[in-house]
Image 1 (cartoon, one colour):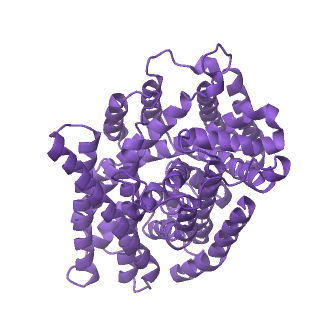
Image 2 (cartoon, helix red, strand yellow):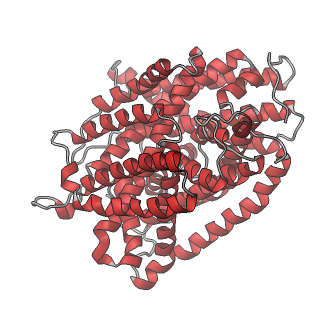
Length: 578
């Protein structure tokens, strides 16, 4: 059953790329004779023409974070695996990949500018201020949710190591491997900058070195166990410190090489997943059978348990993600060498992420029982079980460490990219572009709210709900609503360019509807709690306030867009030639 399910998804994704993806590309009339911003404005810092295979790995690792892993695992436990598969498979082909592709093309056609700058060109300054505010709030929730979930993998424990004195610590192994991976990325960036070796040589050296880092992590795991009562909080704050430094470094030093190596970690995880799915049942009969019910319920209970609309925001990535539009227009568009590269990098990478989500689903639907560990451990151990199909069960420690390190690697890539994008937003808002001191201030301002949330989050413990779950629903909702607003901006641009708009307008309406619906449920729940228990400055209250702010910002942007679409207003600036 599991191999048949995976094969069906592969066929759907492949057919989507070569049929629907090609149709969208024809509508955009991609032209390789037109110089892209990366070529025209090449500066070695932000605008860097990059070969598509290298850029695909960097872009893929930046977008494929915890969302396509944690979201499907959480949603499957709530609703069963069939609704998840349907939303991922069809959502990615007709919505998610179209969103990413469109955001990338639009940015390339607007001098590599961000989604916010595209909104300013198309809708004017008022809309620009609105979208900047929305993006910054959405990025805050990305950083909060992912910093906490990454920190949890660094203090992970397993039952077989409880209550004894062992020389191996699972969380420490992941922390060690992840740290060495980041150091390797910097070394690779320096080597490429100084010696300019051929790409095949650096690949041959540094990709195997990442696997060595995983092996070394299992050997020095206890050295990375922090001596604090709340080690998860300490790791969370340390991760935010890393984000501060990483977001200020030139892209060639960390972002590009880390993204390239992270892409191979993703490819390896995908490959291991494929081998486990298709051959695990052959080597270990019965171990990889589907044990989870195909469908559980239309309502999983609790205030946010209804399948409609919360399936579509719990799986915050894998099917559609507004964060991807920020990556496409914030960093990737500045590295596109030819317009034709936007299809494999934009549309293709999103389809690959959907398969990451399917592999994540495979790690949970082969488990039995209702009381399962968190998504990070489910995924890490699941990838570890898949890898033992190749390596044998004697190497499970290495395999599980690789799986958990892959999970944290995906999140690391997204965390520092999110911080960099938050810095860009504030630099745009206050006109601070090109000023080093201002860049540091903008980065610090972006990290202050996440640092507060991480520092005040309740400590983990037996029976305690993980802190990141307090933010996950609103993170997913704001993320999907950002996708709808990006599609709205692209639709306005296409309308003004007198091109067809149906392929962006229809997905925009669907995603806008389910996310606004989800926000109203969250607002109602937060204010009902305040009515019953009084006002308290806690996470639930803040989520309700932020939900209301997001609805207001989205409504104002819709109003500004309607004025342009229906001819009642025109933006003050003109677009670049397309």
